[in-house]
Image (cartoon, rainbow, N blue to C red; front, side):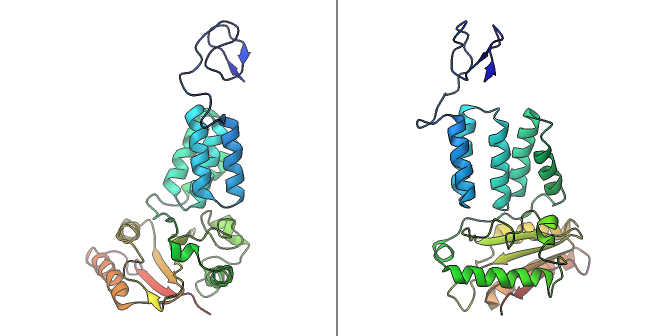
Length: 273
């Protein structure tokens, strides 16, 4: 229900007030036969199935109908966060909180995301090779990646700390992993400023040259150069090819020339059993 600006009665969100005929909104009352709540529910269903891209489309349709729909803005923020898109998630939360500033859930999520730096390279939609990876490959790599987090690298102290420390960490127990493999399956950022990205490449012997994009490298380099990250670890399930290593070396040499802190480097590791 909304309030008519002319007669101040509570009415359904239609184009015209049924009592006084006042034009309530120039926005459509439905998109493809669904109203805003219908698209919101469809988006929530997609989120439950880890279909983040579809969910965002649904929330966008809801917002085309009602741009002041705080729930749609908040859920869209969660979908972007699950995809590793910190900056867009914060933008959506700002929209939601401008409408409903007392929403404690959205305020809490924005505070957690604010602990992570702007410009963190986002996750990317999965290519066919990653999408078609078998379930056991995903589960095996997830287990190995999780073990690296709280094992050798000690980025977190235990599996239970992953969610508390890193909102956008897409390894168990985070819900972003199951059924939703991505080109960059996790962007982990710890309280002491260390970052870790997992790259999963099935059915190859070494990481291809372009596996880490120029955008990724620019983002990691900027974080290190600006002091927003103290170290970056890039993990893969196979060995890094010489050409891929060379591209990382170029970034590290540039950081050294710019007199960055000695530990401010990109480290390559192999996450394997």
